[in-house]
Image 1: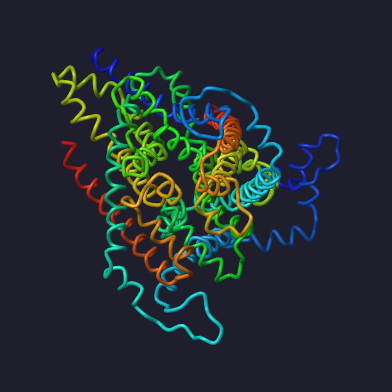
Image 2: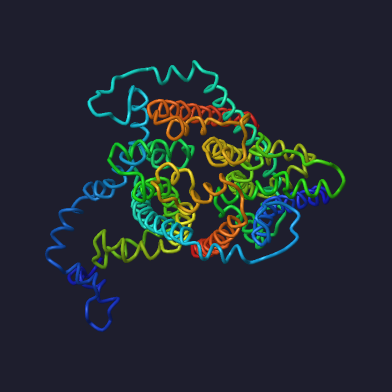
Length: 328
Length: 261
């Protein structure tokens, strides 16, 4: 910077050629503001602290606070606090989970369902993502992708309702089957694990598709051409090149779909039945139906949070290790 | 790649498109059925259900309530998320990976757990279930998405932009508002519309954090539990059209973003 003498006003002047200073120029000339600015941003360190303050506060308050509080409430014997009663510490809420099949069965059902739905979603969306990334011309890719995105902007409830109309006893599928003469009486798709699966996959497919697409899109075409020149067949090319290189997309897609699908509440209520009760419904019961048993609900939510995060942690670790072996 | 697999792939793609659109198309169609009974076949058609919805004061009030929540959430999420991104994006410091992971945490926690945790937390900080609690819940959930989109845009901003502003006498704040913020504009529009959609469509947080006044998804859920009716289809169709328009708009501004960088 050569001409530092009059630099303070330049930014203001530059955007207000008429000679009058704009708001920002005036602000920079303002004595009180200069003092403030000098105290706040004097050193690099101070500037960093200013920048870090709100984000760190927000993370502690809004991201960690609710989780920590939830764990804590899980150890109390009574909450929300009653007048004239001091809550005592207890492990009973956590122990209750392991003592009753009514809790354990939906818990493992949720994990198993989510795992199955994740695998099916991966199998369905992989060819779609591959087609988009490798077969559609680059200038058309966005259009093709947009076509898939539109349904995903519609909310959870509306899309769940759409599945109810599709699969109901008077729904479209049964109507088609009946008019084809394949069935006499409607097949009861609804209120089963099947209808729940169709619904959840319908809701989560995008979270798999997008990571897969962006991973596959990055694979250079000449890798595959080189492999073909060296005599690799289609299957070998897929197994040795495409699959290992799309591994990151698979990992993040599966993680997202698994975590999101364990967290649905309305969809299981509307599409599932008594034999497909998931853990979200169990937890919600402590806050709505069975009177307010918050501590137990909090403990159960904590158990589920630990289980889902641990499952994805193990999965990501396995993917990381398995991947190293795959690319040789 | 052989021609054979190419054809199979395109069949899979179009089958997937059909799978995505058919349920929604059926839902829209059913809104024009001239009968209270949901199901096929449809013998007579009508627009009456839309007239019913337009005259339903409860639906209109709920619509406004959901809108107010969505707009407040969006404004808050944009401010906090952008601040988060300007902090996490360019700065290097010890423990950054952990801070980043914690910042993204609300985006990956299963919905029901996040809703329960926030319900308990609202009690702790003495917020009654209702609008304020929902806005807090939605903002917590949306901030990571804004931060990620803004960080992506921020990483493409040339360092010389800020340096030039500083050379011309701007301090950090003025440089941010006059140089960085205009540069972030397309990302902010995209992220903002995305926030609106996330908030407007959210069920689980609104359900657990809400008071007696339902949001639109909670209202549809309550109506569905007491029985399907073409009126729900009419409401859903209106929501669908609105979200599609908003989504396309967000997509357009995001695309311009990619071209600009």
